[in-house]
Image (cartoon, rainbow, N blue to C red; front, side, top):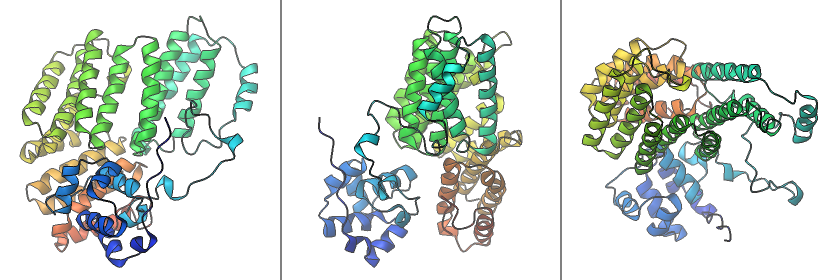
Length: 445
């Protein structure tokens, strides 16, 4: 099947028109879509197809009956209509500076794309040379060392974000893949496949945290493939749960629910532990909440708590789910209620969990503080919300995480109606100090 042609470029005269520039700056997509239709001949049905929106949604936006605020939707509009990222307050898009490779250097379609920042890793030739002199029989101690490094990667991911870790994690994934080629029939092959699955999931997670969703999905798929080879259905459930969470960020609520349901099905076939089933039920609750299904979300929350009460010391929990403790259950319950707009229920739950949050989990503290600030703002507690958000700036600036930046940006946008209030002015001032203008992804004051 022939490859689809790249989207039609907008006329330069439209992109430089003051009215278009102003509409993009304000993210006034009613004006943007009308200008695109009038000046570029791109009609609503074409806008919908190119931006992965429904025609009715585009019509509502053009009629000023609906606003588009979700960052993933803004990115899809930028990519679909070929509006340069800076015009919409985004980082430069990948298509803005295409690089043509000589035919001999083009990547084979079947080869997995390497993440940005891996150019300093050894080439395949060097890998082969090193592999030829390496131990040809990886042992149990090799697996133990690899698992220890994975635990360390996750700890550093919480503290600093995953972007800086990605080259090392990807390099280790490739190393484990090379070990697998030399351990056919080996007694440790099963363990190595489990390690490869964990490394692939972690690589996918670092891309997800950077909101590089296509790359994340690719590596999550790799993790599923490795886990399937050893029939580790609980780990497959874990990866599907990650993909479900990503789908909620992409405004694909139906996909999120389908993935969360599939994750639970996989876990139950292997008699998943209560802690695993509790975590998966909370992912289902997020999906229902994103869909706006109050009854579905409440039922999933209840099931998560019911499963958590069944946890006992004799359970053999996989290591990847031990993070899901009582406080994580509490904060996730609060976030699910916040997603539903039930701010009065959400606020005390998130505040309680945030009080017990580990001081080293910088990203978690930032996320949860911004959710708390949103719940407070939703109730009209402007000063309290701004105070909470100011306290979130320190952990937010300590991690490299585009997801955190987007939460910050969205909260800043929610303050727009109150921009003249002293509390909002103080937050803006602190925001500029914590993430000064020019930092990639930081919101414009």
